[in-house]
Length: 123
Image (cartoon, rainbow, N blue to C red; front, side):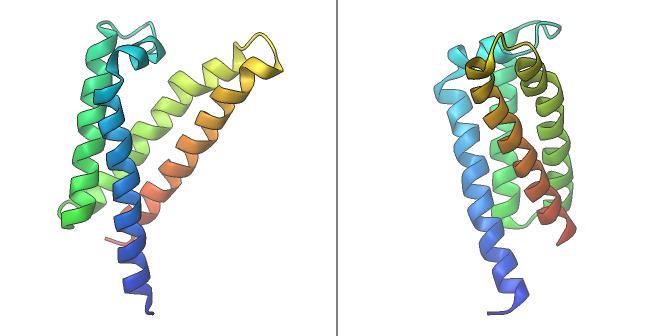
């Protein structure tokens, strides 16, 4: 299998994962609103806006339109989430057991940002 085929398959899998997270924002918007940083007014609307952005990135990857831009913007978005949501949650956790879940999300979103950069670099 050549590199172009492997890259396309990887991009499709990644788009499905990002699309799932986008749909999850719509299915669990109220619950996710409490994770929106307090300095942003209107918590729940941010959950839905980011869900839409995730879905648009996934669609872009699947139809191969504006893929580079979508990958770069998705990476930027995910790194902003790491810095404004997950890192403060890790640093403010009262103990080790309370730190585990935010740490997993921090590592997950950092990895997803790296994958978005890889997708962007191939288009």
